[in-house]
Length: 351
Image 1 (tube, rainbow, N blue to C red):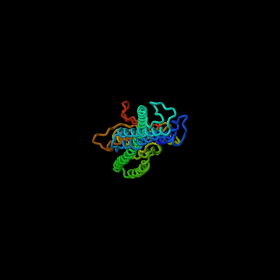
Image 2 (image 1 turned 90 degrees about the vertical axis):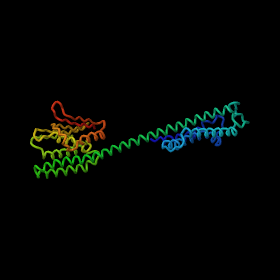
Image 3 (image 1 turned 45 degrees about the vertical axis):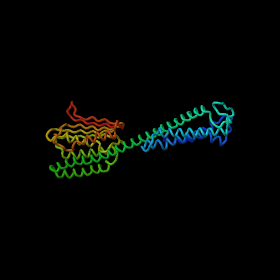
Image 4 (image 1 turned 135 degrees about the vertical axis):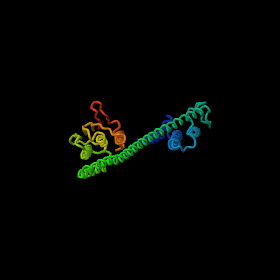
């Protein structure tokens, strides 16, 4: 709820009711007397709105030539003088019935006692200072809320732009690795290379349409990864063992960020396969009522520093996307295990 929706009705109510509250028990309620009693609340509202609608917005926007203190000193003094003159004129028309010399002037006098005037002036000045502080507090609160809202919108826009940038990076990165695989496959078997190109077209169809969405069905992403593994198997030697296990409950509606796990799968094939030694890759994709789990275990054959395939951006993208989409709702453990020497990478997403 906006602060202005509360301020304006209260201000109008104050202006209408305060004059009635200051009428004495023996004073007759007339329109003329009501106008005199309305002078003070009217000047308070005027002071409030001059600050709330003009002085403070100009100050916040850096368009105010003079300081707030100088403007309000003049404003308060002028308001107090006008209220004092109105009060003096009121007593000439409606003199008090029980005058007290030295405090309230007797009916035949046309000016206030100096002591009474100074006390009334100080009291009115304090009231106006309170009004200025209230306007300042409300305007600053409103400004703080607006800045927080703009900061939140800017943060959302930044994250959306970051995700779009990551998606634009993922597609070329994935395509580069896959084309390298097909190129290597052409030297082995042209028929298998043709089959790989057909599978690649199906994978690209998934990337072109599903990658534009913020979230996709977990089952669809699992199907995509399974197709990618089948494509990779076409060029694998007999010494490589690849297992894929997908566990999704019936009628499961879990969703996940598109292409979130593919970099881990690519990393497993890149560093987990040797042309001469026995190699293994185990991929498990599991969905439960409370979490989504991607567990990949592979043999570890680190590439040399001269190998720049993939340029090492895949895992960086995974970390950035996890921080953007699942901050505080995920865990990712990856590294070589000392017990078995295998590389373990496990992402757990909380629903």
